[in-house]
Image (cartoon, rainbow, N blue to C red; front, side, top):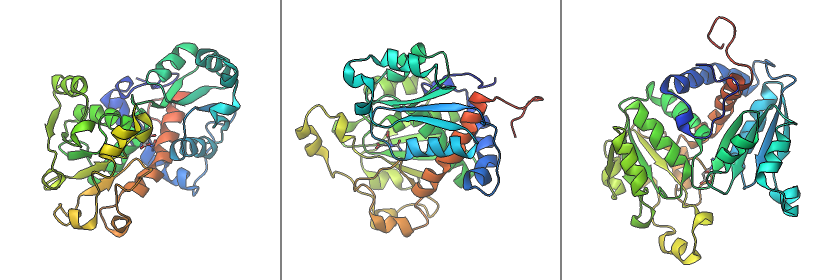
Length: 315
Ligand code: NCD
């Protein structure tokens, strides 16, 4: 089914075939993302970036994607500079914005904000992170990174390490990996375990999930080590954050016990969870992952705003 005009609020909004279609397109977009080839399918299109929470990679890679495809952006990068400060509701802000732009990319601290935005907007809405909820486009570029490294998304063993309670990137990623039949190993401090309802739901849908709190054991025969930052801003109490801060760190000594082909991923920003010494090893995939954000978001935006070329395949 075409993605033209569709909202992407959770990763469940995309079927496995649709995810594969975006990844295949993203691969072809790489030279365009690098600037060595030029195409302007989004000329005349305006994409609004409604970011009500800090962002570096997500907003800038979305903006780069729009510019590389010849489109333009309207950007809210600071909620304090909008009429939300005057008491305007998010619903009204988004409803108005949808009359200025052809699509809206939203990031917001509240879980459910992207779903609300999709009701307020008659243009497609893309969730770029809603609180501790979902971050579906991060998942697409995470999957693209794994696919580039292994040529498949099936049968991989993926360790999710860190803040599995509040980390929205792992919430979306775990659902997608389950759909591709990869094995998921959950490794977190006890206070930051994946919420029970979420784990049960994944198991119910046939996901292969195990918990292994010992990271050394978890990575022994893993293909991917996906590290996350402790989401300090989501903790109700600073003391709860302090109790878990610094409780895990990936360094060269740890990786010595892994498969030579293990890749280390991280949505970034990192805040001490991966030692800089890992950057120079063949395991480090996180900067490639950050680059792949551009071709993946190009492919997604093109499919949502323009759709496939007549005759089927987008090329
Ligand atoms: C993540 C996010 O915002 O959820 N960052 C990103 O989008 N690349 C992860 C994080 O902030 O830790």
